[in-house]
Amino acid sequence: MECVFGLVGNDFAVVAADTSAVHSILVHKSNEDKIMILDSHKLVAASGEPGDRVQFTEYIQKNVALYQFRNGIPLTTAAAANFTRGELATALRKNPYSVNILLAGYDKETGPSLYYIDYIATLHKVDKGAFGYGSYFSLSMMDRHYHSGMTVEEAIDLVDKCITEIRSRLVVAPPNFVIKIVDKDGAREYAWRESVKDAAAASA
Amino acid sequence: MKLDTSGLESAAPVWGAPSELVDGFSAAPSFEVPNTTDFDGFQKEAIQMVKPAKGTTTLAFIFKEGVMVAADSRASMGGYISSQSVKKIIEINPYMLGTMAGGAADCQFWHRNLGIKCRLHELANKRRISVTGASKLLANILYSYRGMGLSVGTMIAGWDETGPGLYYVDSEGGRLKGMRFSVGSGSPYAYGVLDNGYRYDMSVEEAAELARRAIYHATFRDGASGGVASVYYVGPNGWKKLSGDDVGELHYKYYPVMPSTVEQEMVEVAAA
Image (cartoon, rainbow over all chains, first blue to last red):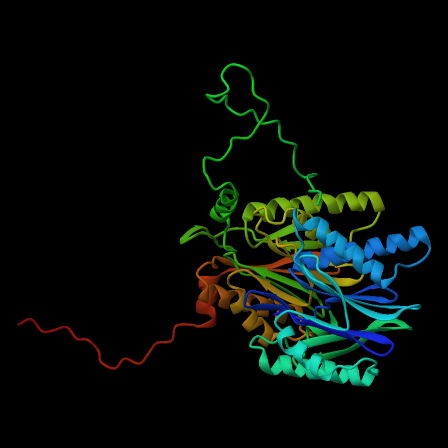
């Protein structure tokens, strides 16, 4: 089952997501990157139906880029989150998207932020959040060990604790995870946590 | 989402048969309302009736020399084998192949439509379309028809400027880039043999044998797969069909009948 979680640290926000693309009992791919770099200082970690996930996040990404082209300045994280929620809400009673999103961003004025946006267009600004079956394990881990103003080392340590817990307790635990971070220097990939190295797919 | 209907002719307005209530004057063009109280479930039931269960085995993988694509050739309707000679590897253009799993008509039509779009791209841009672009075109079309009963589980394999490319695209709207995929009811069986025997640096012959073997093993265990195991190779100069072997004959080739030791010979009873 798809696991996505994230938290806000001292001057950064970090999100982690599993990397398996699954179709009933088959794992089609175990290195699928589900955290999209929305723009230079925003990350979108999405989980949900495969078609919706890619199509909806790309739609948001292109509209965010369009705004920047038209207006010369990028959207703030809050604005992007509200735009995303608005699109989900508009489609909800016609043609709903089954995607859950954690939107992490860094703004120069307001610092790091994390937004919890679920498939029925709920929007919350949070310090920590999680989706999927993995949330049953990662939320309590984060509640227990989180404190505001964590350093990168402390935050990654907490992320690793959550991954370990998910791996050991979730019956269909995804083997591999990707961790991405966003801070004043931008959004980038931080690390992969692989327990099953798919040698052939590694170069895909 | 706007539907992509460029491949379909616009239907002439449907004139409903004049109902008993509206006698005489001509009714506006309308569809016949389904004769049921459950209007929402009616559509779902109709789709479920035609939804085939992707009874097939197809596989494709990238290796050092290019892409290897293989498939069986059985078409089944429930428990009835309707054909043993279906072409499940569709030639989109001389350097791109698509595999068929799911509804035969859906796959054939939309692959043909994709071929048309690829050719239009070539004419408009004076260069071939990439495998990435072709698969995205197909994925977007299938996404716009989501929930309407299309059944397509396909792999787009080809060779473009960036080298070999392989994408898995399905009618749920999913699109995955990868190094090896298998699609269909026999795919778990094929994955086992494929994953175990796979190495990136294989020769074309070794890769073809691996593909053939994986299809054979899937047809052995999966009732909905069988017929002929076709193997195609996509290289820098385009695709080439390598072999098409009947899986029954492959069985005896891989597992030849050994004369077993006779424990007790039956002798004719002497007439009393």
